Amino acid sequence: MAIDAADLPLLFGEAKRCPFAGSVLTLGRQDVTVTPAALRRVAGQCGFDLPRPLPTDLPPDERLDDGTLLRALGFDEVDSMDVSDYEGATVIHDLNAPAPPEGLEGRYDLVFDRGTAEHVFHLPNLLSTVVRLAKPGGRIMHLVPSSNHMDHGFYMFSPTLFHDYYRANGLAVEQIRLVRHPFLQRDPVIEIYDYRPGALVPIAHGGLDDGSYQIFCVATRTEGARHDQVPQQSFYVEAWKAGDAAAGVRRGGGLKAVLRAVLRGIPPLYRAFAAVSSRLKKRRYMRRALVPIARHRIEG
Image (cartoon, rainbow, N blue to C red; front, side, top):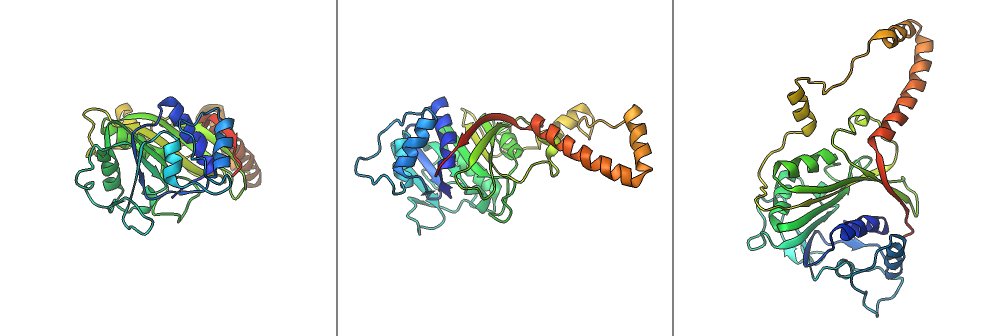
């Protein structure tokens, strides 16, 4: 549960879209790895003016705390929720529980999940709770691990989870992004891609590269939104509507099928052909699936 410099372009972009204000609840205390100097530098790179100045007595090269950072982004009130008080959370609550703490429903302008959901076993209760904690018109923001985070937590997430759950419960899904970090690279270039439901199907089985991917999702609690509707995965809903369980997957035919059959009769040639063809297909499918939004070189 940490906010680092690579997260800042996402936060700044959302603040540009809809400025932060009022109250924020973070799921868990956030270990901020950003210094005042780094915050100002990345803000300048992103063309973002901090809504509030940092306190003047902060050492420029010491890490900020989560409250100071979030207030600089525009919030008046900062709370944190954790199952334990060992890090000084202001609200002690187990997110596995079926309901939020009494008195906090509809309380917050933003509920911010920066890498907590993957550590909570009862995910449906967590999702229900974050909806109930947000006030009508308030936002829910997740920045959570996806591909290449094995054993970091209980879960690695697919964007369809957030898209389908929030849509099923009547919330407005404002944006979903895939965020790629190079593996084990200092001062990484982060790449931000748009998410379109269904676009990842061609690369869903081993089609990504060795980058470390995260999901950034923002949803707004609308008037009349619910929290208890169980979604069906949208990919299959579309397949059922089309009456085709393969969801439009084309079966080969014609000349291509004949050539493929001939090559299969010559195993060494077919293996060489398949190796080259697989690499080309993977590149083509990734270009179609991952639509670039932004690219940032972030120095820590």
